[in-house]
Amino acid sequence: MEGNATTENLLGITQNVADSMTGTMGGEGIYTPTQVGTIVCFMVGVWHMLFGILQLGSLSVFLSDMLVSGFTTAAAFHVLTSQVKDLLGLNTMGASGPFKIIYIYVEILKSLGSVNLLTLVITLLTLTVLVINNEVLKPIVSKYSKVPVPIELIVVAIGTTASYFATLSETYNVKIIGDIPTGFPPATTPPMELMGKVLVDSLVIAIVSYTINFSLAKLFAAKHNHSVDATQELYATGVGNIVSSFFSCAPTGSALARALIQEAVGGITQMASLIVCALIVLVLLFIGPVFETLPKAVLASIIVVALKGMFMQVKDMVAMWKISRIEAAIWLVTFFSTVLIDIDFGLAVGVVFSLLVLLSKNQRPNSYLLGRVPNTDIYLDPKMYPQAKEIPGMKLFKIVGPIHFANRENLRRFIVKGTCLDPDELQKIVKKQTKDEDQKEEKIIQPIENGNYTFHDHELKIRVLILDCNGISYIDSSGGKFLAQLRKDYEKANINLCLAGLTENVYEIMEKTGSLKIFSSDRLFHSLHDAVVILKS
Image (cartoon, rainbow, N blue to C red; front, side, top):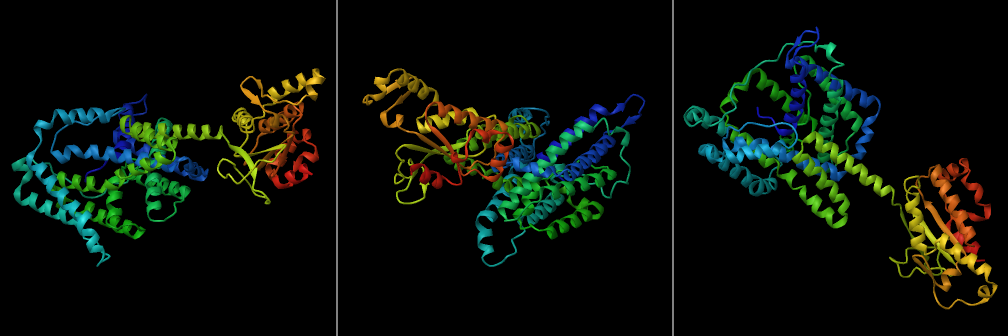
């Protein structure tokens, strides 16, 4: 029966590979597109099995919720686009490659004058029945019965019967499913000598197909409170592709529309999938010809209505825009790149953009000034908690996140800005005061301006800076050297830099890299409160 855009995309990539390799190949013989497709299918299965053995399923953590939401919504748009010609009864040609969706809609607009009116009526009637059932009847029926009305099966039966007796295809030129061959193709071995030639192409298909599979699995798992084992999914798709390659199959991929329809009618267990598989076998072997007169408009309408939940994911982006615009940007970039360019390119763009966002965030560790809640050992951000007060004579600064070569310069700027203690500027003031003993004795009344910073009297009297390090998740050798150099810089400015709350792994790395040598034992503290109490006494 009718496919959808996600599976069609995989088939399209496979077809491109097959088209480029059919014909005589340097004495290796002539290969048909089917043969090339089967070896690609086999290699995709091998790649998935290899990914599973190497535990590369763990890389799925980089598929953020916003990326998955944007990607699946864009895939739904491709599915919708693939159904428009059947909804309207058009004979438009398809397109392939980047920006194909633009060419498709241009062709649709040019062909609007040739819309089949009876097909349009069938579409409108089917859509109306399905929407009324889903939005009105289903909530009412669910109160009295756990078994939903099989409205999709009903409209298929009515559409097939009406089309058969009214001869809609012959009389009114209504598009129908057409010939459905029965039986299984004979088992044949894929041309293994082509493995090397399809190695790279099959890798691309393996990545795209798995991402589509896992994205849908993750989407439905979140909806029904299930968990998904990424590695198990790799093994499952790997075995499926390897076995099916011996039966003239192309690489398998999740059918977005069919998955949504099955989920919409309540099929959320493995038993439902087993029943579906059994029915498909019956269709392939015996009852397939029964559906040959089914109007494509009916099937397309069922698919389009099932896509509603996917398009409603736009709400995820709208809600996230109010919380974090950069995360909402991941959704937008993934969606538009997938829609406008293509599914495989859009996925790559979305993943790369997500990684760039992640890298950008890692370059900006969360850090802020701390104040003490009076008469407690609680230290909070004074900007958020006004009851937390700064301690005279010292600055407390918390670092949350990793410290590494890529973010150390940013962290230095955050420390300087947050504490208003620039070691370079303070060193200039110390040198100036040292040269002029009279000025050293004189009380500073007016602010002293140097560069971009203004130091007041109370800031010049700060003699202790404590870094709360219990939020540092990781530190590399460059990060350790950064803290050591920061200690030296502040020491030249007559400020005692101390570290508090170093975790065990951070302490070990700094010790092994020699970064701790610059810190004497009286400048390392078990906790921030210990440092405050001891240094104040």
